[in-house]
Image 1 (cartoon, rainbow, N blue to C red):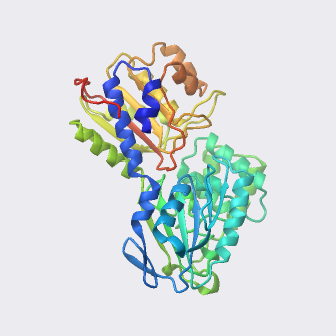
Image 2 (cartoon, rainbow, N blue to C red; image 1 turned 90 degrees about the vertical axis):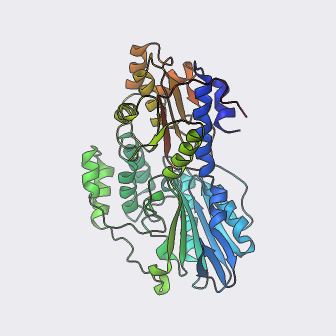
Length: 443
């Protein structure tokens, strides 16, 4: 049904027309990053191989091996099946939700945001799958955000519990996702191009990105090696006060870390590989902009992706949006967990915005495009000038990281369920005039 059908009936608002307008824009954003169509549109079977966006890849054996990992894995694997059909010989799908297994492989559910036994099992099977790719086959990697936690196995010298502890501390400390993935690449058997290095055949990587336009960063780049980092792992741990026994083991591991040298098994060269970004948060944002412009609104996108502290990002977003216009922002902010409440970064942002716009005619929407925001059943929140009627109570909920409780009581939660895609978060700041009550209808 989309956000309009799923979320609008439960939202409490004095601006129903404007609310539906923003929800329809969010629906347009999700449609633009729907994984089945994205993958199907770039793959085709040709004589002697396959084409990727028109680029020919020779497959002498006629066999394609598929590895799909991430929150969009189910849809991406289905898109590949529809495009390639019987060319897919075998494969593996690692996702955050169960679904029907494809004819050519099995589905494993991993843990997120903290890796679990399913993540470890998926990583072990992915290693076996990559090792089995012959020189006359190709490995088609379908990668999306969330894959870093959903597929994980530690390098020698670290235990799986060390990785779980590390992930939990990184997430709770407000470390930006790019830095988290940098640390993950060092301590994992399946990140930073290490899976590609196991294959004897060429590796094609198709990516739906939640962290920009670098395929080596998404899911920590299981099949795409990363370039040199400007920030040592030890410096990241120091900057966010991550200490103790596990942190020391990570430091020691980092000093001995050797990224793949670009040569695969049996001398396979990395220049035979290919990586393509199919969609990013910008793709979703542009679709939302087009929808709102079709409604006659003045719309702008933020020139830089969302990042940093969620509350600071909210204040800047509100200040940067001119009166009478709408601004679209995308990316991923952080929230340092100090309290014991429930919530996620988008709910936290929505409550902070509700506090800031209290008493105005403004509106603010924030949601995770994967349909999940923190360890809750909500994707985010949508607020207006009437959402926060008790500022002191709202501030206390923010201090306790308990945005979910406040927004639920205010009728301001967005519950979409898992969307099957993931291009990070989308925010909409609306300072337009709600001047045409007949303009939008629920469909």
